[in-house]
Each structure stands twice: as structure tokens, then as C-alpha cells.
Length: 131
Image (tube, rainbow, N blue to C red; front, side):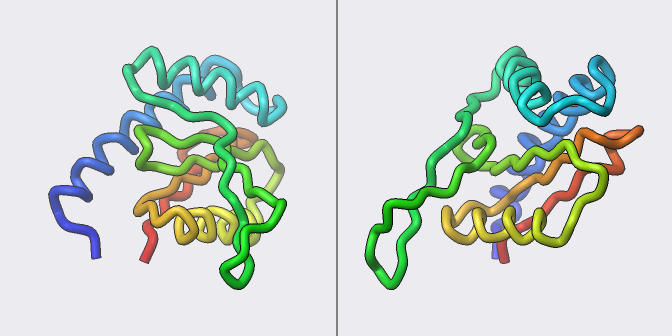
């Protein structure tokens, strides 16, 4: 269970992230590659004073053993919130499962799944808590 103070902090960061994503979507519109939105979103987030890590490698352990495989988290904001970006016609359950797995593996509390390929960005945002 997330403490109220921590949840308020995460909410404040996520509001800033969503605002930045909306700004990028307003400027670019739908229909571009995910990589385009990612680089522009990084720029927008950094302009807003947020710390952004891009393409964060998450090692895969199997039965306690480190493998040679890594998961790649699109963006990690303030070392707190995982962002998975998409530019797809339709969000699938696997996209949400991917985000939830990343949250569990990193023990982060909050993740955002953002699909830029929608007419209104608010319709392409899913916010998920770990646990």
C-alpha cells in the first residue's frame, strides 16, 4: 500500500508528465513513429525540470540467475515513474501487461502507458499502480 504523502508526490510528477505528453501531441498530432514522440517528450519533460532516463536497461533474472537478456523501459521519470510509449492503432492487453511487469520487476509504484496515435491524447493514457 502506498502512503498518502508518497502518492501525492507521484501524482504531482504524473500530472507534469501527462501535461508534457499532451503538449507534444498537440504540436505533432497522431500518426508518427514512437521514437519521434519519445525524443520530443524527453525535450518537453526536461524543459519542465524533470529528470528523464531514456531506454533504461532492466536485467532479466531467471530462477535467481542473471541472463544475457534485458528489458528496455522507454522512459524513467525522476527515478519514480515508468513511461511506456506507443504509437499504435489500438492498445492491446499485452501493452498493459508489459507495464505491470516492469513495475513489479523494478518495484516502482506508478507507471503510465501513453499511446500517441489517437485523436485526443487523454484517450490514449493509462495510469497503473503497482499492487
